Image 1 (cartoon, helix red, strand yellow):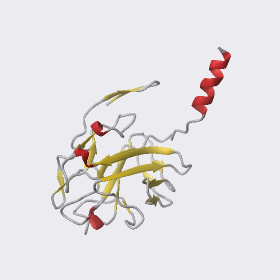
Image 2 (cartoon, helix red, strand yellow):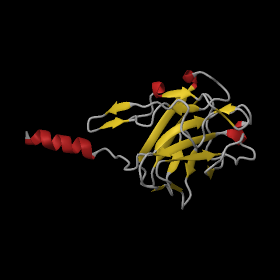
Image 3 (cartoon, helix red, strand yellow):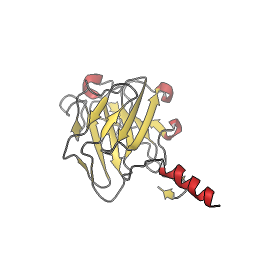
Image 4 (cartoon, helix red, strand yellow):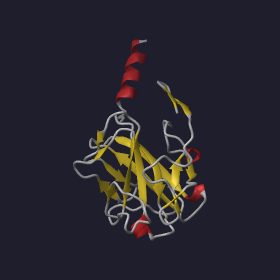
Length: 193
């Protein structure tokens, strides 16, 4: 039995988990009312009751795209943060929390990854998306609920049902239109939504 205990310790100690449960909740990779150069965006959510300093956190894909978050960037408790390539004067009509350089990080229309790491290089969240969701240009991809242990399953995502600004579908900075209450089980906890 002592050998089994050490084996479990070795297995669990080899994994790194982020302490912040920040969630990627929405992705607009192909707007129709404005060009991708002006209208791409994605959103994260902080479901905790404390603000989180995301200075030096970063987003990447499996290619060469990478976006490092600047110092002094804080996502408030129970709040959304929208990352976009331009401000509301040219992005299709929504408020932006963080503007980034699209030449460093872009959202491919057909298939891409959005991988989120903290400042210690520990994975916070990851979404791999592709065109299997259907829809097409002008629809954001929304997470159906906030309490999934792993939001990287296609069945956990839907196309937005609400419009914003000039008429694209999405809910940047607000609760998703497809958000449903969920119950999710993991080996050590139960979440009710």
